[in-house]
Image: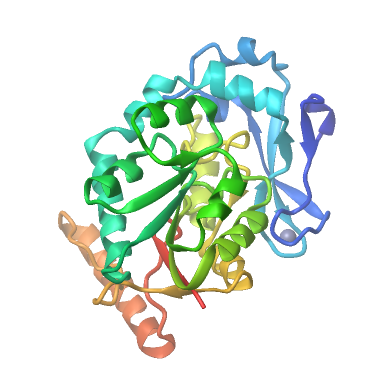
Length: 315
Ligand SMILES: [Zn+2]
């Protein structure tokens, strides 16, 4: 890849997972490929960001551990422009303050609470966005503390009387927590290892952690590559400015294992991915795949886990 195509607002990264500086370009993305289909973006992004039409943003694959990551880290000036001028905050809020978002959050909060006792709980939502989880938990009298670095969002949440901080020191003054929520955060941060290290310091024995990141497995990337060939817009999770890290489940498990967290399955039923399908070929395909997963479970004890719905316990 040609490194001259990114300007000096971007700096080259090592593998954020293992620290190796040996990696190769796995996919090179032109701006339009990941901006055109993004409904949170204002349409005149190229002019506002002052980007050369030649600028491309590569996804690299680490030669040592295989992890995929955005090779270039945007500086804070560039990201401030993206967050202040490119992302339409109203669209973004609407994306969180809707029935689907509430229902998804209530499902994972339900599972999380089922793992905790009945005593006075203290929960941390790390990267709480516009504070939806905080509102839900507050409505059932559970103390939930939010961490959100965005000043704009923080102001609104404080106005709504939510318990939220923008500095990590304050989180330490409230720790340990009974549970930590990390919902779509780790893909955004330059050093996910550091954040997970912080979680272990904020935890006590048996602290339960919910984590969700987009599932960026090889099938996902194959699909995105074929969309590029067909000139179709990419999935919004493939965005090298906002999403710096692309996780498969094995990397998330290793990341948390290194920090003292073990995977748990709060569901009583074993998940082998068997679901209701409309019919015909889809149903047959899902049944066959579920049979393979069932055999895998019988032999190895592995259940159907997805990076966008994971629970861990601090040992
Ligand atoms: Zn690596």
